[in-house]
Amino acid sequence: MVLIPGGPALIGAPEHHLSELTAEQPYPRSWFADEAPQHIHTVEAFLLDRYPVTNTEFARFAYETGYQTVAERRGYGLIYDSYWAEARGACWLRPGGPGTSIAGQEGNPVVYVALADAQAYAAWAGKRLPTEQEWEYAAHGRFWQPWPWGQEWVFGKGTTADEWAGRMIESAQQWAAWWQQHRATVGLLPATTPVGTWSPWGDSPFGISDMAGNVSEWTASPYELYDPGQDYDPLYQRLHRLRSRYVTTRGGGWMHWRHQARTTERIACDPLYSNWSLGFRCAADLGRAPQQDFPTTNQLRYVG
Amino acid sequence: MGWLTEAYLMFRQRIFNERGQVASWVNIYAGDTNIRQAQGLDTPVTDATEIVVLPAVAGG
Image (cartoon, rainbow over all chains, first blue to last red; front, side, top):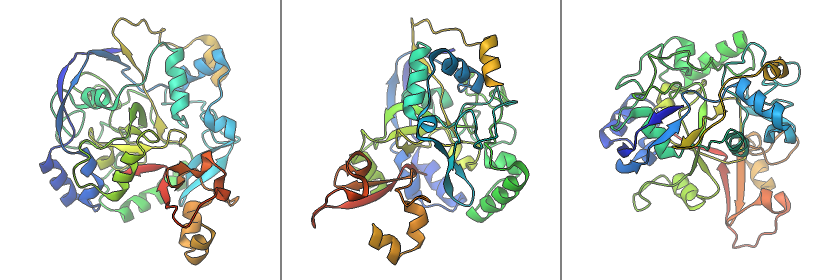
């Protein structure tokens, strides 16, 4: 884990960034307006995992505890074909459903984890989930920048649809064209990359890896508007009113556009939801003594 | 919900799964009650009950 020093931090995106974002991509400003107003939030010093939790790490937890995830218990996981579909048997161990496995992806982020699964792992590891303010602070540092590494998107620093496509995706049509090609070559499997693939080039100012793309990450924070008195999209206002029922996820995943993997991007997520691009990493308070982060022989055997 | 998805077929794939159940990428609220935590599509409502369909994942 990495020590993140405490102190005041700018949270949220500045208005000029939202204006620039609106001009350079097809979705309306209201989609991103919940990133404002930018405000100062004081964060206590804490520890944060350098990487998202991997299949190997989660396998050790499942092996030692017998834990079954929400997706395993309900018998299906969500995959995307021409739209989302409930794929029978899809879960973290069988990410494409029956007959698939995570062999060869031991170092990739675990996916198909609901909030309760992430919390259970964190408790077992003697850790906790980060708040969304802690997550964002760790992603861009004390001052705002849209990407963990700086002000501009750069290839070779994060796993997004743009990175897989090898070009900037500028429209829903371009995304759909990429998806059709990707699906034809990779199939219906999560296209995560091993954690740390883009490190240190894509790291945050604190040396945290994989904070733009690869997997979206659960936080411990209910989804709330930064300033409920402002005029937000009615959907966000509704979610705010239901705030104990939606939790904020951060970071964007492998099938998202680069814009959806920015440091201030916020997604409201049902705690029971999981899919093949949603994972997590853990935090800890100073003074806690988390278990060691390395796999055991039994764990690797269980994965294989 | 039956009327909605019959009158507007495009909503059927967005709201129901292949088994005709509320899909896991959607939440339906009857007032402040998520119908999954009540009686599902049989959750009692009145003429005054506001029914809201929300995505399970929402954001920019």
